[in-house]
Image 1 (cartoon, chains in turn red, cyan):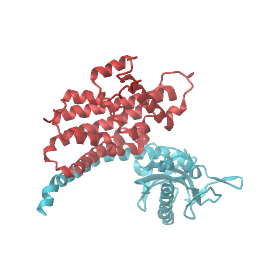
Image 2 (image 1 turned 60 degrees about the horizontal axis):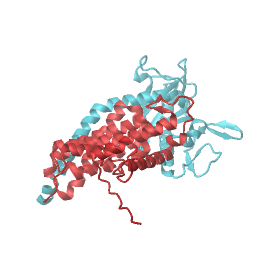
Image 3 (image 1 turned 30 degrees about the vertical axis):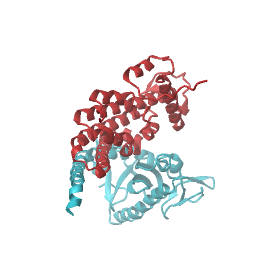
Image 4 (image 1 turned 120 degrees about the vertical axis):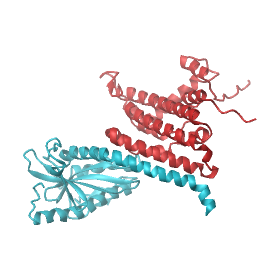
Amino acid sequence: MANALPTVGQRFTNGLFSENPTFRQILGICPTLAVTYSVASALTMAGAVTFVLVCSAILISQIRHLLKPHLRILVFTLTIAVFVTIADRLVAAFLYDMSKQLGPYIPLIIVNCIIIARCEICFSKQGLVPAIGDALGQAGGHTLGLLAIASTREILGKGTWGGMSVLGDSWPAWGVLAAAPGAFLTLGLLLALVNHLTDKQAKPMWPFGALFNLLGRKRQVAPVREK
Amino acid sequence: MKKYIADAWLVIVLGLAFGAALAGVQMGLGPVIYQNKLNEALSRIPALVPHAVQPDLMKVSPDQVMLREAGSTIYYARDEKGRQVGWVIQAAGQGFADRIEVLIGVSEDVSLITGLYVLDHKESPGYGDRIATPEYQDPFNKGKVVGGELRRLRTDQPLKVTPEKTDSLHEVKALTGATISSESVAAIVNDAMAKVKPALRARAAAGQPVSGGN
């Protein structure tokens, strides 16, 4: 018997937590590393990805019965490219300075694996409502990932959050975190933290561990070696 | 043939629909984006031409701040008293990844390059995008020290891109790992100079003083 597809609620919460694109699927890492030097740029990127995910979910879920198996990837790519181009033009028109800061990273959403993966896994298999739930869940998870990394980098690297001073002038800004290597360091450390918090064998040392447990986790834990 | 159409009709229909949608978006947002770029170009004039000030579009019309010659947009660079001190040429060409759009500041007689600014590009992050940094732009913006004297790049010969720093006022150093992007910008500058210099001189010869407006 075929497995039942997840409901809209499951799709949404999975995207936020147990299938989080940044910390669980490790997808969309190129923009995650490149644009998280500030919270503002991370939120702009997250907004653009959300727009493309939701629009792709609406369109692909509505034409899913018309898709030919051997042409589906072409249709996915075509659809994503159009919505990314629209997002790029919108940012250039209404957030011009941010468009200059983000440079090629908005157009590069076309090759962001999160979106094409959701087209393949959910949008082309489920109806409108579960597809939108999935898109919002994945977009929310992606936003949480970007926001966590950008907040860590901006607060520790510049002493600010969203451009507002939070640590004061006495904070010796850790410039390395705001620079390119800081993206790798922060992502690695946050990944380790999330893995620790969601590890079944580790005692939950933080309320977040219990939260992840509550919302369901799919991580396989290696068997304990016998002595 | 029927088989191919039966297979691909959805792609064809989507392609047509998407093309129309993008055309609509461009029609709607194109003027807004153009205005954003115009504002940015005008704001860069003081940095590209020494002693120039930023024109105020609230006080003057776009015709009074720029002209079109040889297919290029050229901005007047004037000082506080309204005297012509140079020009800012908007030029574009193919880069490594996509189209590169630049602003080139030149002296009033178009003999010296006084500044360069990359208005738009999609060059590779970490490599080609360094065309927008001082590492590449310093010779354009600050000039070169030749014989202990700071001198501007000249436009009487086409610019060349070299692997090492030189004293020549017709050469700029290539970016390591981004030679094509470096050469693309130099080619855009050379192309703009080749087109615009004769046009501005012809304007002057036809009785329209180079230092005047429209």
